[in-house]
Image (cartoon, rainbow, N blue to C red; front, side, top):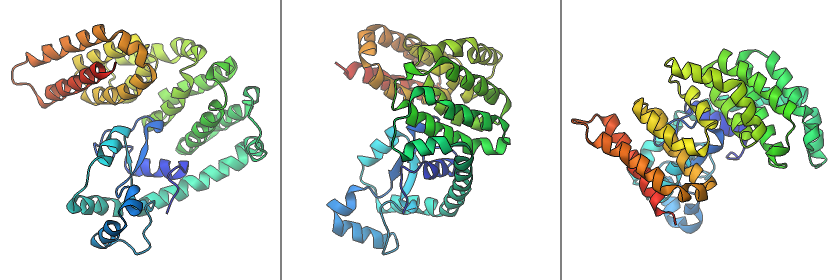
Length: 344
């Protein structure tokens, strides 16, 4: 049995499943978007004990099987998690899912051990101050962000193969500190130092690490100071790469992060024009987060947004013999339009 909130387990299961949602196979690009889904739902043992015991026998699960055992856990998107929660699975589906997960269990455990070993090593070397503050249950003040600076300094010196471990640590620490204070209070030198390091990471390291870095970058973007620095440092080169034909999802993702709300739906249309279905699906998933955060702004501008998206949908519908990609674009646009219209 594992703790599904343990960052080491979450990082391991996400990596072993190639950062993909178990159900739809789309990439889980934002670490906060990672949901751990239970194949046998958590409510089953309590609400349906007889059915639960029967199901365990049918699936040939151990008598001491627990709902939070690794074999019952998969990475998913929020939307897929929610849709699956609303469905009743057939026995054949359960059997199919468990057959896939069984083959991954050893890999997940090995990955957890690797991450844990390095995580604990770096905690001892780089995070003594942070941990001592946490143990004393003291509030971490924004001026005391030298802890983050220490991590960045060590991060810059380690081998590229160890950066994936440090990104788990720094993401965890940024989350913890920024959850205590308003992001707008973070001092400019800290943001600048992080972005300078991030710039080198984006353009010089394995692109798979960019996905991890982006999770941390998301924490900074609510700060106006961070947005200004992004526009001065990273964004110009990212835009140049994009204009030269680089359509890597990581590049597009960073572009999206720095877009204002008014440009979000422009970006959806542009993505369709570039026939980038993978990025379109990412934006479609991102929309459900955006509507929660910016609901009033979207609703107040609903008429123009719907008009814009409807026009693009109509253009696609005029295409003779549409490809599967075009059909997917139309379906996605319809989903977003319907969702916008339902809010009052």
